[in-house]
Length: 231
Image 1 (spheres, one colour):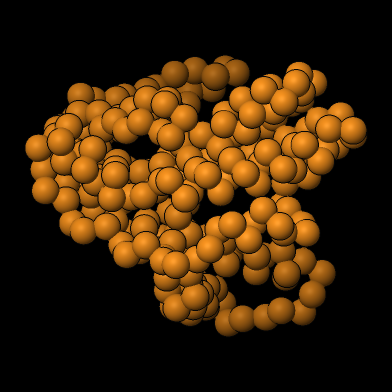
Image 2: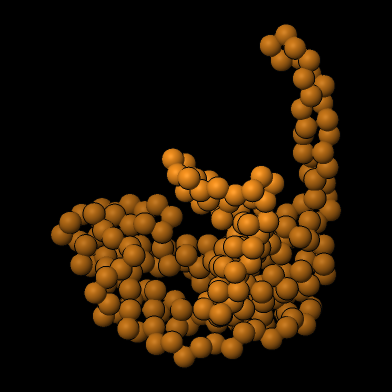
């Protein structure tokens, strides 16, 4: 959800899933009603998300509404500092479409070229902030975990996005480091800190952040399994 689960995104996911299910099956629907079916299903999924994943959707909504306010005030890039200390700069510009007539393989063809302007695309700024913000947190966890592993004397490792690989004998140390750094990151991180930072940087008054829940993250330290595996 924090990756920007808008209704149109849900519709696209449902359509893709239905097309996969239809291959080699007898799934039928009246011609011309495919979009209405997928829109209905997407709406039900959106309702379920709102009921089950309340905090994630609230967080996404806060980031989007705040970004709209900040980007309209700055009319330029909006920045924040990730927990790792990395400076993130988000700057989406509006684009104009220009049609170009050219010749390709002996035939006349027309191509459309998008040319970036100097005007901020406020819609893209708002829709992109949730996934970009989450990625900045994910990358911070990666950096903090790698630094911890280096301190532990582990130099043979590789990472791809949010996946980690170490030598077989180092897997227990990897799993411990990932858990400890994840807990530390999210026990100390709070959206209210980001709110204060943006208000000070850009001179705006942002809406209140969602209320932080009481989930005890420390159970992660004793979890039997992890979505991250070492090889």
